[in-house]
Amino acid sequence: MKATKLRIGMAAMIGLGAMGAMRSAPRAQEPTETTHSVWDGVYTAEQEKRGAEQYSSLCAHCHGEDLAGNDEAAPLSGPAFLANWDGLTVGDLAERIFRTMPQNDPGHLTRQQVADVITHMLSFNGFPAGKTELDRRVEVLRQIRIEATKPTSKLDSGFAGR
Image (tube, rainbow, N blue to C red):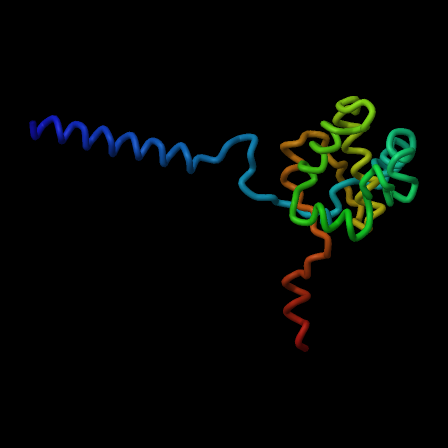
């Protein structure tokens, strides 16, 4: 009887230990934290030009040339857009666009078109270009935070009181 209780106890401990190890193991396609911000220059100027062309042909008829939206289409720039997406990732935005746009034909856009259009949106909202194109893979885009306001660097904050 005592041996049976000991075996059950040991099995329970091993099972709980295995479950804990599985829960703490990082998942390959679910990054645990974002590593970049839209302020880090996550697209190139050339890609943004492609994005502007894609936006004009695919999105502007609903969202407007100024990305301000209308009664039926959400704004893609300005305070309302930034408030809605602040703290989320570029991957979240890409998935929303990929799955729901264009409104009259959802899922019609390619991943590359979505990435390029997002670069135009980022540029229009004042986020800087960089040296590397924005990736089209959502697992990579989920590592880029959308931050409405530019974070202050530690170097800047060290000199703020002087």
